Length: 254
Length: 254
Image (tube, rainbow over all chains, first blue to last red; front, top):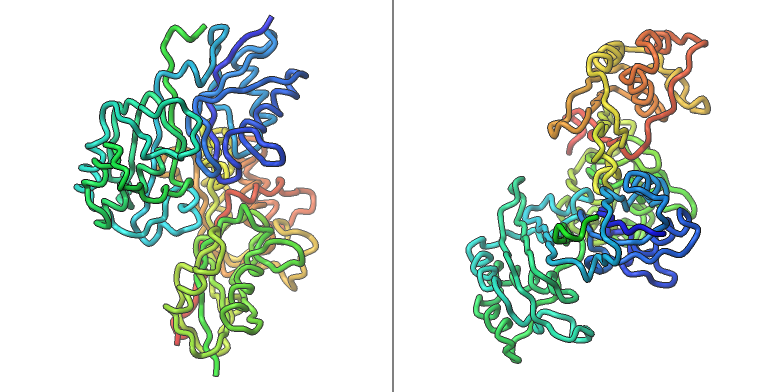
């Protein structure tokens, strides 16, 4: 017999070549599966709600795994944290129904992007966890750019072309810029049913150029209208991006 | 002709084998001297106010160097930051008098030690910069232990035995524990004319055991009285320790 668990992971992306297991690269999936192999004495596959890129952080990644039924949530959490490296930690473990899959089962995902506008953003204690931009952004322009996002759109213009996804429509529930509580820059928070590869970083890169006055607000509208003459700005750097939550319906839980 | 500068460095100690240059190890001195070699096209020696151990951070290390006189403070700071790795940054550069030496010229040094008492201290975003203790400390016991420190004492009991220092007397100006502003644990701040190798970490390790009720307050007094029957607790881990300032008299500055 086996039981399936949803593990909520926090990880500092700076030391990982992203979520997805790769030969000869240190990845989050690789580290979690290595720990589970030791705990269960058999290979255990782990599925995540989102496959973060190299350098992207998680403060609430949902990851599912099926393990022998001698495990309970508290014991699995303790055992994982004893084996996982210090830059990855299981903050919560909950039992879920048989057949649960953290990516297929997620109804929504949320990301946060952190920007530092002040000179101190370049401090070694901050730049690991934010985009050290060092320039002020026009909050009104950012709000107007984010205002275009809500609802369902085709985000083909904001995805990496090689994406194997069958379609590129995403339903954005909310996308808002706010002043950071510490006053040192801006935060962007976005919630959607799904995200394409690189999508949040391309959205942020483009909106930041609008917030700096380097390109017009109309570019945002044209990109969402799939105007072939407009290209996104380069993706914002990975260190400012945090996967903050995956949402699952209550009936998932055992 | 040459000019001498005092560079205030911030560095994340997690990626360094300490301050001091070592063959085949990544050190802060090694990185700064490598940058200066490129900028000056000649070897430049850098002296620091304190030689931090592997894993110890700095948010205000004083470091001195003498470079060709075509350099001014603003240009040197900009050029250093263009060459230094992201985990080390020159936050300030000031010109000082000829012959200035950041270690010999310092009248005092200050350190801070950060402890996390809550469960979230084990988060990968926090444990890099604090001691993830996960246990509450008795604030009264900590205050009493720190109360023994002020004034001049022989800290032989709190130093690594192999220390090559001629004497082990240090004058402690202040040593205080305070509740962290975020309520997640305690901060220890200490100022002295000089510190011995490992001294702050051994003081913190011993005071934490007193704050946990694992050893009596009298051990602190006996250690400071050089009682040979008492030993310090193991040193607190390096990731909680920050070198925060070196103090120089006004006449040092050019």
